[in-house]
Amino acid sequence: MTARLGVVALAGPDNGGTYQYTLSTLQALRHVTGFAVTLYGDPDNPDFRALGFPISPFSESRRDQLKALAAYKLGVRLSDPFASEDVLLGPIYALTLLHTSKPFAFTLHDLQERYYPQNFSLLQRTWHHQVYDALLGRAGRIVCESQYVQSDIARFFGIDRRRIAVMAAPPQAQYLVAQGAGQLAAARARLRLPKKFLFYPAQFWPHKNHLRLIEAFADVAAEMADAYLVLTGKQRDEYAAAMAAVDRLGLRDKVLHLGFLETADLQSVYQLATALVMPSLFESVSIPIYEAFQVGAPVAASNILAIPEQVGDAALLFDPTSVASIREAILTLLRDQQAVQALVARGKARMAAMTPERYGTELEAVLRQLQQV
Image (tube, rainbow, N blue to C red; front, side, top):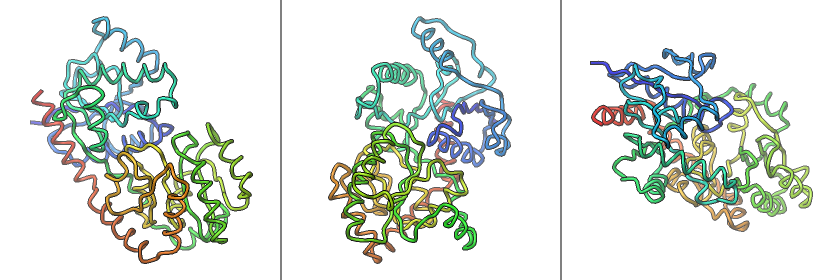
């Protein structure tokens, strides 16, 4: 008998990693059997429409969320837009789920505010705690992408680990499509990309650790005159401080900031990059690492939290709080071709094992468990 599954897809293209995760989840659901999927989200989203699922228009404004949370705290039941479904799945949190009678699972991506409270206002920290506490109490199952986050959820909220499913979602497949030499040459010329460059695609949030990377690269550039650093991301938060460091260290001609890139250009940069460097101080899962693995770019990354779990032996790890450690990792990638070839092979092997089919099987197991709740 076919069960009815509602997927509450609130993330949009501006939501970055959680949107990519949502698309990965929806693509994996095409490989799930025994469930008829209805997507609750934006019916005008072309990515959603391309998946072929029926779409029921749904959105949740901050006002809606405040109303839903307040009503839940007061014991007032609001209307249930998901009453026609048998089970529900939320790739990100949706507070309307607090008022459904249907069993649901949702993904809690990370608890970064517990590690870097200084990066969040008191209001943001309070909001996150109240939202997660309420949803974790109601959810039939919780999904996360690493054992590290599973441990955080259990530790900070007292949740039984047996309720938390650890499943790493495969990244989007577009980076697997190799661009031709002509297309890559055109992109290199248009974006003014140098022959040898390190790539770091990240917004300029404090935990992304741009300043230490720039300091480490200054030492690298002093030893290797043909090395460059390419950055992407909108001009926000610590962008001005990062560019001031570039100027102070005399790197204006060696560091390129490309801003926001469309998908095709981003794919080109990945495929042209000499290596990806990921110096972030916090990641539950780093999508750029997966994207680099897909195209065969070697990776050097922080040795913190869930990143070692994500990369296994397929990346060179460094201490992101040490400029010297970052520098040495970069120099290894630029000088040791034997090490690079080994890392690339291991990265591709890890990605070959991460398929939508495999993820669909894992999701189906969680959905079957929900049916028993």
